[in-house]
Length: 159
Image (cartoon, rainbow, N blue to C red):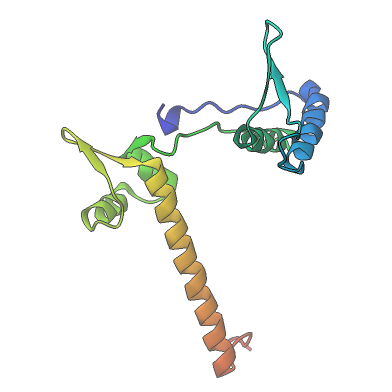
């Protein structure tokens, strides 16, 4: 599944009451004690077969239902190990393809090659994004601390 071909899924207005009921059931499920006797939401098949929905699936359903209730389109799921071509990876990070290529060449972002094409795993993109976000937040915190120490925090050069 290519990232650029993901289907946007949104709820019709007439589905919202059912989604709100689902939200209540799913939210109660995550607050249940984890004892053996706990009852989790169940799925009922067309033949009447029932089974409990695993908590990991309940959490995914919670996210989907929450987005749909808010009227947001739900993008779908991307497997963690999904390989993306370079342009798709650059689009995900919102950077130029040349910048992403430089990240690959400097080993800041792992990739695999199949023939002449390079691919980046979606999970590696998420890890890179998290690292850069953490570094950015750390740099901002250090700048704010330095500004407070020097007494320039909140003072504008235009005053």
